[in-house]
Length: 401
Image (cartoon, rainbow, N blue to C red; front, top):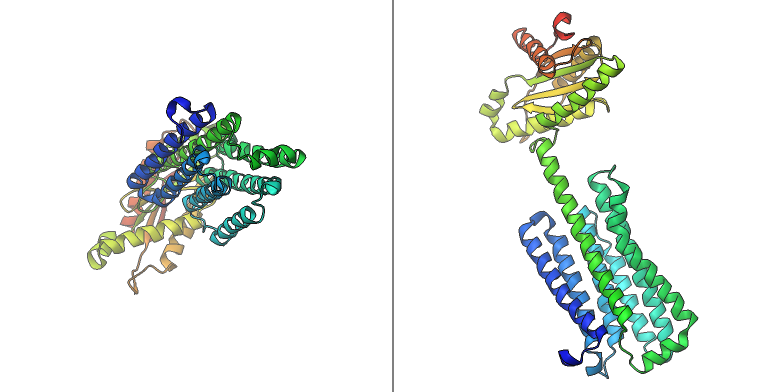
């Protein structure tokens, strides 16, 4: 490698790229150590950065290895890097990586380098590798979009476009490069025969593309972390249901809609009967299993417009928009019967589970969430005092105020 004083602008750009890729690889290794759920993906992306840096290094030292096919080796590193990036994205989303397809593409790249190694065949080698890497960039763009949409199907489209834009840009450039190579093969063959090193424009483009794709990966990780933090703040860790905070927000929104449209809003307070006995007789792990099973059952039986939340302890709150008292009582009875007939099994032993349910409805006047919940709680206590495993509706005078 030439001294720093004699480096060309293109080679200086490649040297900067090598240093940046090393820092990126170190960053991904640190992320792998600090974020166990994302460790596998982070390790793949550390490899992505190292392979990109390796490709830069080969170009930087091309003059020192005249008998070595630098272009072929750098192409292999580039394709391997994109495959690692794509495999990491698959692992991030929990999708099984298409390892057979990845291996086939890698072998195909090697065959292209071997079959069209001669300078007079450079146009076919460059065009084939450009199309192949362009396709991988497009595949990465789709995988990045899937990562964003996986967390929230209603994610803002602009966010997904921003994350996938570098990969789309890279795909476009590589396909255009293949077309230009086929249109003007003489220049390509001459440069390849003279072992012409990479130019300044190509060096800058490659550096920009690799770093922008790395930034897109970082953006996906940050987005997923932000979504997980937001979900942890609004969802119960044991059952996965919305927690009390989320229920309060939902109730406030539905109350505004109910007041505007003049429709009723009902609430069911569901409590497991003799839950302490389940813990005492079968252990707290069995109690957790009962809570999780009941949460799934309530979600399955509730309507799409309803919200099932864990209110606290063994209590669940079901909010029923646009539901009058008779409808709330009917749905509560359906839930009670479903719980009574559902098998709650722990370590091959059946755990008998029933619930008591209190129902209350707001239908007119000023809405106060605390009042609605208090009336549902009062109806729940009536159900418990009536022998449990039943549904009680709050008095109309109380529920309607």
